[in-house]
Length: 167
Image (cartoon, rainbow, N blue to C red):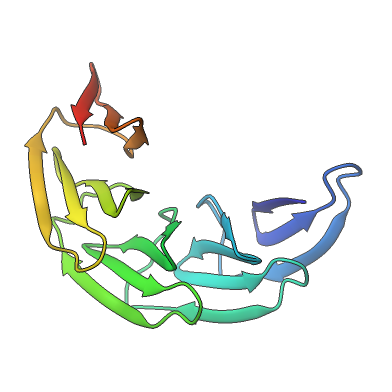
C-alpha cells in the first residue's frame, strides 16, 4: 500500500492507485508518514496513529500548537516536534515518555542507534532517545533541512554547504 496525505490521509492500492481507505483530518497533511508494527503515524496539527489495514484511529496526541513536521519511530517510541518542543511518546498508546524545549526553529527528527538528531536554530543537536538529554551540539550554517543518518554519520544541508558529522 501507499500512504499519502493531502486534504485527507489516504491508503492507496500500490498497483491500481485506488483508495483502500481514507481518514478525515483537520487540515492539509504535509508531513511524511511513518509505518511501523501495523500502524501509520503522521502529523496534521496533532500526531495521529492509525491502524494500517483499516485506517481506524488508535490514538492522537495534541498540544496547543499546530505542526506538520514528520515523526520518526524507533525502539517502540515515536519522536515528533511541535513548535518549540520535542516529544517522545510510546508508539503503542501515545503516552508521553519525555519532552524537552528547544529554540522553536527546528527540523523533523531523525533517529538512529538510540539517539535523536534534530536541527535547533543553526545547530545539529544529538539527544539520548531514552531520556531526551543533550549528548552534543554542533553549530552549522543557517537554513538547513532535517538531518539524515547513515553508517554513523549525520548529514545535513544548509543554504550553501553539505555537512557530514560523526554521530
